Length: 545
Image (cartoon, rainbow, N blue to C red):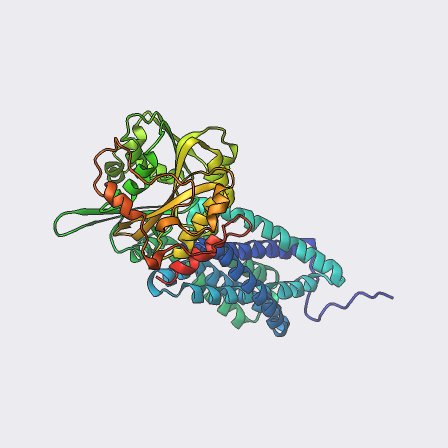
């Protein structure tokens, strides 16, 4: 006697092609769902900078919501075909518009995090409801034991996730960008869900249900296609809302968003500003104060070979090349888009004085950490001009391991200078950098200057410490009120320094004097790859301003 369950009344068994069609729909829906997840993570990392935090929020909330969605789908199994089509249309609409909506919440409403939480929960519930309904549809084609049905369904689901996960960074982002990529996936999602139901399960739908689904699909398709057509206009408008001055250049590179703004005062003065992922890198009005303070104290000594890590705008390079006895400068920059901007944009070229065209300059497009690991050269001066450590991507560039690699690249009597953020706005991050440099075997002297666009801004000048010096000095009290650690290089200008606009010997001496409210914070732990304390300090302190 057969133990096969009876087919439900009114449901006609279908063949292998129908089962394959359902599994293909599972595959497509899984790929679309994973793209939605990755799009939310990527957008958060671009806008907020905390990749780990954004990934944790999105993935944990969506997994939780998927469980809720699976339970919520139980009462809908009676109308599995219509419910699945409706859920896919809603998921396509919300998922396709998710990036656009969150970008708008960030640009105009300053409600990004609440909007992200709500979006992740809603999308998670809808994605979680898919599998139970697809299981019912699969069983209505041909009954099989639960284990085999689950195996088939999950195999298609996991393979779809693989394809979606690979398609997002390697296909959708490079070719379409985040906004249009999500919209295309939404259109595909709607087509897969509605196509499955209207071809294989149309007889289960009432005439009214067919009309409603047709009208809903037309509405969803129209909204997604319209949003796709106007995506460029939306991005330009939203991007401009983030910046006070007119945007004259913008590009989304594989690494970051590069934006250049320009304003003209009533007196006719131009202010050109470079932003990377929304963070100000320089203002043409006062960038000389930053770059003079960073470069020239480090040049008071041997300087035949100079290494610049970061600094792709060429402004630090401009100051280095003012010394005729510099024989070679190697500049390591991660993003070729920044280098291209610095080499070709007339506004930036006017600021860096065409420094990249100097025959003494060698540029390397690479991650500084990875490049240092393979480097066997030695340099007389090393400048570390990196973005602030407010993201997981940049935190490793402020680790003891990184400074250890820098120390290994330093010749005898070499100097290193590190831009260290603001000792006023982010004091713990500033002094954490010093503690980390000392832990890597560098003796340091901190100093700060005023850069109106940034506020009070600090640097650490360092040299290789004698054995035991850095460790001994890390927690030792300062002698005679000095904040320099034992063995630190003197903070001075070269005797042959070119004419400077913001620095002289007296100004530089004063730069090493910190008022009581910005004095060294004792007991700061160094930041490492496994314990990036600098990230916690930078994100926590800057969020207060």
